[in-house]
Length: 293
Image (cartoon, rainbow, N blue to C red; front, side):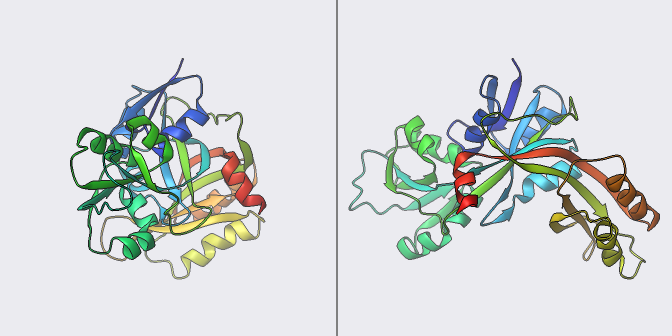
């Protein structure tokens, strides 16, 4: 039985993703994204499951930056799941009349529900937690506090909380993509009972500072080889203003010719290229249904 670390505690969306990816293995909740990655990097767990991207709020920067700048290790799979955010309260409160003093949740969950919060609770204080599950667990332990949390239905069941309002996210078809990381292997993993969306190779590319039109040349290296790019995103190198690297996702696994050729061409241009992973991409049933609509 493998050990799987995920952003905990119990009741997070990451736990839902981890259960789908590893239904027969030991799931270990860890309190923050960096600590999950730390455990995988030190090989005290076999795999880490962490959020990487949300359909509403974009990249989960703490995951990407920590993976690149602190503890690099390969991505071996990705899994997208549907996200439904609910407003939870202590069961002792009256849903019809209760106005909380504070709303607690993970920053991404707060951002995904911005419009709802501005409409219904414009003056209520917002406080951030390390995860939606942590927020729900805190409320269960402090039921007398005038606080509501934003979390999922599993968290409500796990911690005995009442759902005061359902589906408060700003947009329909809200989805989060999670990545599976491992320092023990670079081999891609198969996620059973999930829809295979295709394959990806994620690259980090740093451009030469003295090369005019370098980004155009980078994109051309993929274009003439007819390699489809599903994502290109810039992130600061943290070495000074105006210094960036690029995350590029190519819609295929690493092969023997095309991708190595593109990487060789970029290296010849003076770019620094790192392969973050070459892996299959999956979705759960709720995301698959949204894709078909």
